[in-house]
Length: 408
Image (cartoon, rainbow, N blue to C red; front, side, top):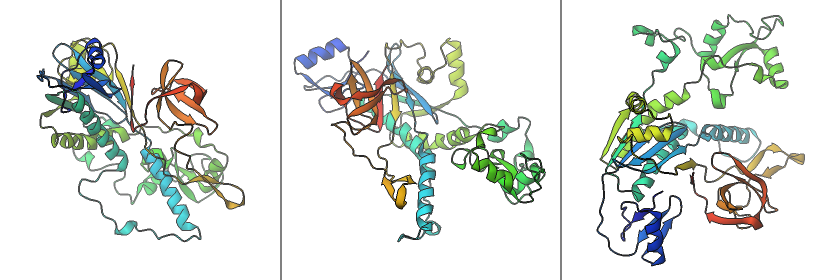
């Protein structure tokens, strides 16, 4: 385990051992700046001795790995869990806005036709992941004197993933060539026949049914199937959507990674000129040749250029969470047409959501609250510590932020 050190001016120095940091704190020659990862700041002038430190970043859409290494030691290593709930939250917000406009209430009209997207615009779900990569690198750069940064990126050919034998002009001649839209193609593919009753109900009106919800599955043809209107209404009325499964996997992560790679690189290049790119096949070759296990943090160590650096006894797990819930009212309407408020008080007995607390000697996070003062406590990987712990047994360790950190 290493203790990260800042000099008198707040610039990073080489980390020290816990014993040395403890002595500096006892002699009041340093102060604690951050608890996780534990960082101190010197209160006196220092020589500023530094070694070459390289940071490896294993970029991803759901998880990423980071590893800061010297030639001999791993100084900081861990995995990061990115947010995957943004698209669903935006779809829910869209439903609320449409519902408000359809109600006889005093509300503005839709203005989506007079809005423009700036150059370099990204979908909010993708932009958040790009920002998360940059934010984490900045955080590590503040506590370690990095001399080089290497980011692994990937480019996926989704057409080749769907059809391994595709080549030449077939890339321009997709399945939907000659059709007006995906709906017309799906009807043609399914021979204008209901895929549930096979035409036995003799309903001539056909609908394009989403196998997965539009929030998660989108409008791609492999997520659509033909159902007659009778079967479609019956399917949703009885809640039988689970009977259908998507035949092919979604390529959302592959598409997002292809888009994200240059935005991550260019975003970091504008801040840190000592950055370079690498690719997955090089990381895989390094990991296999050195007989290392397949993990995001280990991949990041290989990316840093020092795969045989001695790992630390503990690693870190970071998780990005939302800052606020901006939904004002609950979706379900109560009696007499009243909508219940969805905004809870921020502090309950002095604790808020995602606070790090100590309960019976264990560090955990507040994932749920009750106004009576009982809390749902969990670790970052989802392990339940206690479902209803009293606030009297809790001790606040760290206040909530959008980037939670846990030492493992």
